[in-house]
Amino acid sequence: MKNKKLLSVLLLATMLLSACAKPGEFKVMDAWARPAASGENGAVYFTISNATNTGDTLLSVSTDVASAAEVHMSMMDANGVMSMQMQESIPVPAQQEVIFKPGGLHIMLVELNRDLKIGDTISLTLNFEKAGSITIQAPVKE
Amino acid sequence: MTSKHIHVLLYILATSLVLALIAGFTLTRPYVYHAAVINPPLPVTDFTLQTANNESFRLSDARGKIVLLFFGYTNCPDVCPTTLATFKQVYEKLGNNAQKVRFVMVTADPERDTPEKVAAYAALFNPEFIGLSGNLTDLEPIWKELGVFVEKQDSNSAAGYLVSHTASVYVIDQSGNLLMTFAYGTNALDMADDLTQLLKQSH
Image (cartoon, rainbow over all chains, first blue to last red; front, side, top):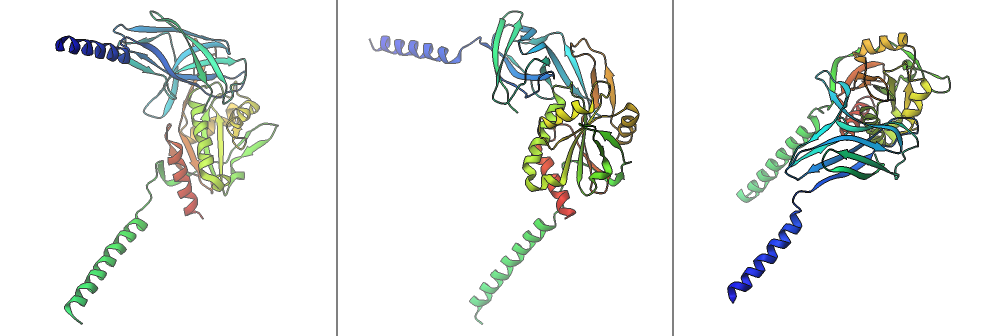
């Protein structure tokens, strides 16, 4: 009788634990966009977190606030020269995070059709090979 | 004088000596700049470039003030706004001292950047910030003298070509000499500390 009670407690604990750990989650978080004027180019940053056991790939990005949304990477050489390179796709390996941040990977918003002001929020859709489309909200901040 | 009195006296003497040493060390310890210091400072050839409303900016007109020069282009979405956002923070951290510093962005892309465009781009961060452009024949000697690398780079981007450029910030002193450079990514607090120190030295 005692054993049965213990078993159910253990079973409940296991269920609770698994509810907390959320294994296999794939998400995009901490998104933000830079302030920029209409007609100019903007940038969006975020973190892609892949806690699943399969790798994925970011294929494209779309938004209604600009003519185009492209993935670029800024790179600095040993002489302090900064270059930007457009990326065709971005691999997101299993159990890893890919961080988009100033001076590194970023989404380049080409030719904004409106001002991005601090306090605004823009919507961005990321298209992944396996996870499909994920739409995120990015607040505009500095 | 009893031996107890002597002990107390010795104790006071020893403590004062230690305190004096600590104070002396703290006060005389030289300030270490976060920037790369150019020694001796390099005189910069005077130049004139254009800003908004058909106005021009001559470097020598800023004599008596520290000039922070940064090279970039307005199509740049990541690195250039990052530096201008840092400038904005530096300006705020400097408080009243900000009036003794000029924050200037010079284009690395005169083909697309009109003076109006660069001026508006810089002013978006702070209306006091100056944006400059000009003819390639005016810009090239400035890039060359300061060692600023600029290269157009073809790309499939909808934004057209991209520009690779040196992303450092050049610090020109009150007499028009290149004094130091900040590497890209230097944080606003470190920049503000260095500038405050420079202003302190020059009163």
